[in-house]
Image (cartoon, rainbow, N blue to C red; front, side, top):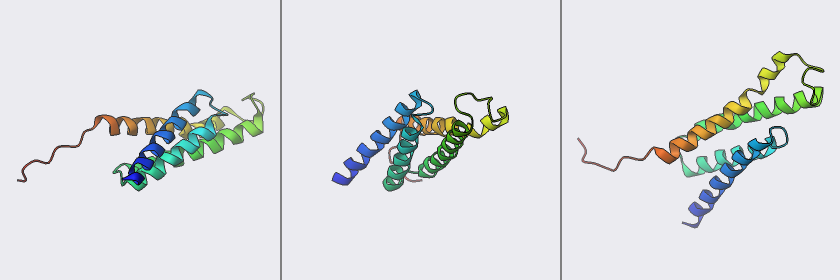
Length: 120
């Protein structure tokens, strides 16, 4: 019982980190990355049926954050200085992974389990 409450606390902490990190896209990226890793680990421990999708979201965020930081290191804040605009597409998995986490949380909140009924 105590482990279940710790996992639930870890889930909410990961959700908070993932949502708070979006306020600062470059410097909040490690928060989103850590929050999505925490969400991935806790849903796997819970045995959540959507745990696989949390893993996909985590991998997308990892790829997007890596490309965001690489682009920032190569060109700084001036996006046109060192790289062409096409390189910006590599950052796209970062917001898509974050949006996938948001969708999965809404599914978890609003999709209720059916009560057990008579078997046919």
